[in-house]
Length: 278
Image (tube, rainbow, N blue to C red; front, top):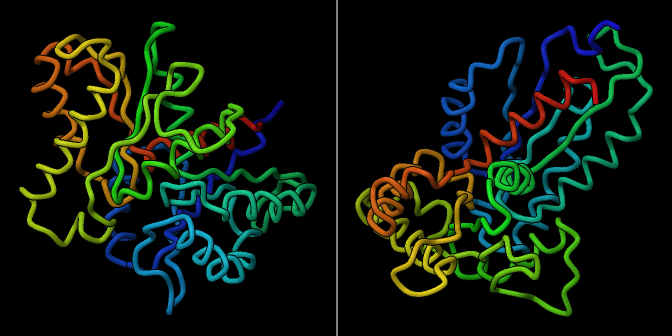
């Protein structure tokens, strides 16, 4: 049977904040992935929008601002990536809108039943981390920005993975694979606006604290084997996380920790789903 997506996969990458600088920073990262037969379009929140999404409340407001502008674009794309590291309301909202289009032709294609795919960089990074873990006792965690995410993101992980919780958990999940979230104390815009060395130091400190969460005893090896970059604005900061892993665990063990950029993971997930005809 012919592949449903013989035409290029058209992916709309959505920055739900109003920073065009942040949108522009995503482009070289996505282009470097080199996927054949893929076309990328970028969307930045209409103005006035949220300049930096620093809380779940900001995420909800940004969804209200962006959704009306996104709906007319749905028919012209095959897949949609919400580039905000949160349990962003745009993900389920766009899924519902896209489901309504299933069975209709995607504009400009010959496919009469083109299924559209939606994910966020948060969801894609969690799926990627779980796929990368080797042993049952291996786990993952998140390095993010402001302190509010130390509660919000663990709660989002529990929700995404279907882990029942009586309240917000900031430690390891009952399944033992999620080791929580450590933060830099910076917001998304400060990752680019502050001096490089200051940002690097804060990224490294947060990474070391996260690795410590996965150490049975102080000074022992860490069970954290994958780390999510918990902000779209952390694109390009993998080196700081890698350096922290090397300093904390030693050069060999440090190299074994997977560092997951949610933007790269999200594009990969969407491309695979579309090309596979799922």
